Length: 232
Image (cartoon, rainbow, N blue to C red):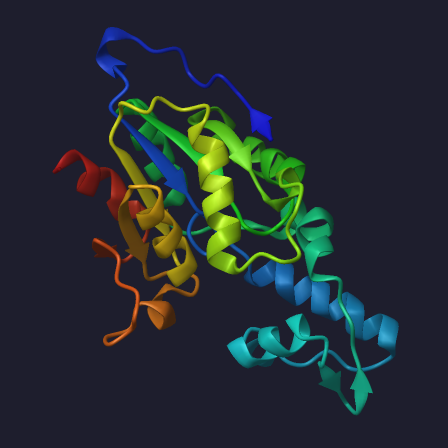
């Protein structure tokens, strides 16, 4: 767990709410990170790296996670949990509008915990510090901070991380969760948060019309969240 006291509060910045914010696909674009990782893995396997549009297809990612990725007839393996540690701080990019959104949220007195079900707590800290928004996060949590992860579902993993974050945050404050996946939203509901789905990352697919899990609010991106929270 990475803790930081954040910006000093003034009378104009009274604490207003708690925000539980997902990392990948919500704050951070992982596309360049994933392409770089696959390129390295293909180079080591002696095969040609597929085009970025192939690498970034959801089916490709599913095959990689299931350890059944085959490129040019050769099996290519990647330690998915090592990807953030090795590539996040170098190749992670802010989703458009996310940096000014974090500045606006901090100015409004929102206390934000950045919570990822993937790995890379220290890499995340390095990344957001390099963007100049490290102080907008009261704490950072990833799966690095869980003692047991292997047997957990995506929802269970996220919920445990959210509960861990909430131990250090004011229980009297309204709590919000913003994420791009159904597991984010389900876990957010389980901890009593008002949930916001974003259409960046996996959101367009996860929150398509007719999907089983529906957030309380749906916005195009994190850019819209400060105005949404102010209006409630």
